[in-house]
Figure: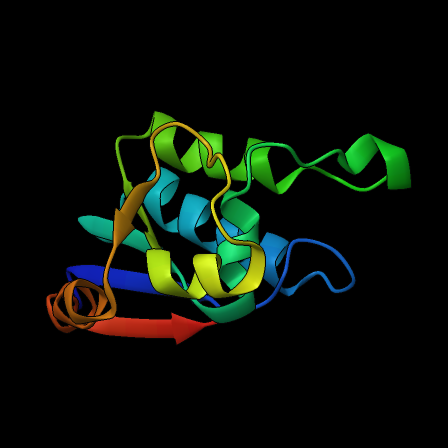
Length: 119
């Protein structure tokens, strides 16, 4: 059985449920104890999930920030590819606890896991 999984979040926080579903999968893997190590990497449009100033109540949507916080509360790592975020919104405050990484670092993190799933 695999001992590690990395969940790649490639979709923005709103408009589809993909990012939310990916974060819930990560949380399920952590909470179940089935897999020892679970990490999340935000890439492409998925980096928008890291933006601290989201206001999901304005559109009556669940908060992906809450889902990310749940993952962080279990001491799992959440990474965000900095250049992808910067390309989309420039300099912006991100949620505390999310680790900003380069693409080179992201590739290394991904290669450290036995399973990879993409949302």
